[in-house]
Image (cartoon, rainbow, N blue to C red; front, side, top):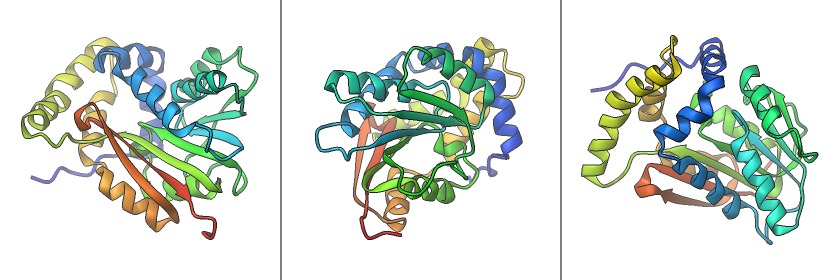
Length: 246
């Protein structure tokens, strides 16, 4: 049975994430059993290496800044410091991100719209989004903006929830999303705006990795790769902006 389209109006998204911001990190650790930290570390290692194009790094829909901070830690390990930026629609999320990153001079957070990124064309060597693209009301436009601000030869990447392929695990995961997670999220966050009901709906209705990969190809991203993690519960989809794309 088809689900009714999830409401992703900008006003609703901003209100929901502002409301859950103070407890957002703790709830995510709890509901993911802490695995979300490992997912972001994996992304940082995968995208930042000796062959990564030179230049700045952008975390789109950065939330409380965890992916941007993972990029900074990875750069320190590599002894190859870059300037890192994080942008998010929710002012409350950005305030928390700023507090978490206030000791890092190479990290800058600001409020902004993923559908109209406040950066010039071809600015960044890496443009990534973790668990945020599904909250954007126009997926194609959001990806197009990420490609626009990426350098030719730079990396565009999406880390997002996906549906496991194993039937038994897929069945349990749907049950967790639809029945357990909204109740737990509401209880721990005192959620009045049903943010965790929205979370479940947005995951179930969002593009699967093959669809995301096709979108990237259409927008001029080549060498697109797909890496499932944790039995396919999340997937990293990434590639390089073609030098000839305009």
